[in-house]
Length: 639
Ligand code: NAP
Image (tube, rainbow, N blue to C red):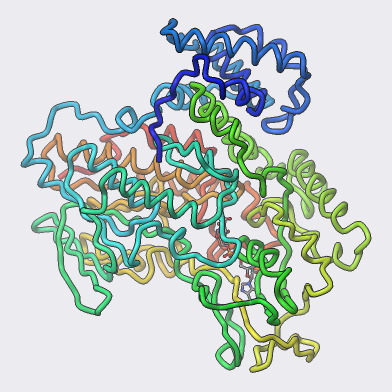
């Protein structure tokens, strides 16, 4: 963990090397930010091809000019030169267009301005309008369930605001998913310089897409740096929370590792349990009969040695996609059972380490990281959004949704064809017949190269049963295996399961939602459940790309604004109005009805059996940022 305050470069001998190593377009944006010299944008514009892949088109002569001018500017700063001016809206608009490789709507200006100016924790934290007394703060105490990415962030913000809190965590360590998942190859597929808390950049990520240990260490480091551990009770699983209306308190029952139960109460309850932590084993006859080691990816046995073994793996989603290529070179045989193929995109940085010069630039050149993050934001999130929308007049709705979606499909198909040009047998199995983004896009983890290996089989026949010695397919063939890996995903549709959350009228949350139809206002609150907030709640997941930390930061901000209302108004409870909840969800459903995830032709874990998309957001990230940045007291009932 590092100090996020950029150091100016001065005559630092490392600076020249860093300017050579850093991304030229990002440097150019940084230069404009620091100097207000607009003309660089015009000079660079002809070389733009898209948000992330045009850097190589910038000619060396222009790169050199940018480096020289930036070296001058940085040296001037280090001598105490004038600080950078605030870019006006017109300049920001032009800079974002250059970063994105296309025009960017004006609603990004405010978000970008915040990222450029408010890059530390204090500036992103709640501002009280009237300083609260210690007693009022005390009376708004909070229980947070879960010490993963969301729970830690909620804790940090509550701490900043002076509101007492405790975090209950079922595991014996913090870090949530990054602690639990230890399967080989486990890592992130959102670039790390984006997948970090906005106020807590890590300039030292070893790779653009870090692996599990480094990610877990990051969250451990955050817990230490912000002194959260004294608030965290590990090995404590919440089983039930019941709202006591008479006292306006949540009564929480938690179970320790030894099975003993403890009760605690607090005014406010925050669920930060995540959505991908209850493993789903495949519903296949005979699963229990398998003779060798058998486990789910999220319950990987760290003592299991796959070397020289015959491994059968069911499932080819994000987890399977990371396990397969990691173990394939060392197993005797890997038999992969694919029920449906995924769209897979190549990314040249996926296995790349971050060069020292780039790390230096990220750490030391003011605004470099902020513009780099915007490029990633566009390339991995909002810049893809148009590709997700159904064009009702599109003539080929089975294969794509609109012209951009078709373009992305062709790009991925071209990659698959080039990887497997001489293997029509494999190509026929791996190219999906549904539109791109219908399931989560995967980044190519050398998947196709792995499929070419002589010791790997890709089986697309349906599984009939698991037998002691392997996996039997519908044609009666038994595929022998010494170990069985289920890369079969998570029980997502029962959000917050198996906890029981009992609201104001004695109704349990899952009763309100029905078996599998989780809903909330902004993904955060539900009428009938006062002083209760969910992070990574219904319709806040991201399927096309994006950064779940961003969504949590937005959710926590809105929650803190609600708590400000509670504390400053000396209210006992705050609760979302039913009509606000209904209207919001109607809008979410109407948007989803025109997006890829409700399109026919594929299954995904974002929909419930009735077809309603409950897990992921239909919004552009900037829209969610805007909606959660404001707080309209009229939308809530205060008592
Ligand atoms: P998943 O995406 O739900 O994939 C499960 C796989 O198992 C699918 O291929 C599915 O086939 C198959 N499957 C399930 N039941 C089956 C059965 N009975 N018979 C045969 N095949 C079966 O699960 P996941 O790979 O664990 O990923 C879940 C989510 O976790 C991801 O979408 C992502 O959000 C997150 N994740 C992220 C990363 C990362 O790199 N950041 C890594 C891992 C996970 P069908 O497609 O036909 O259903």
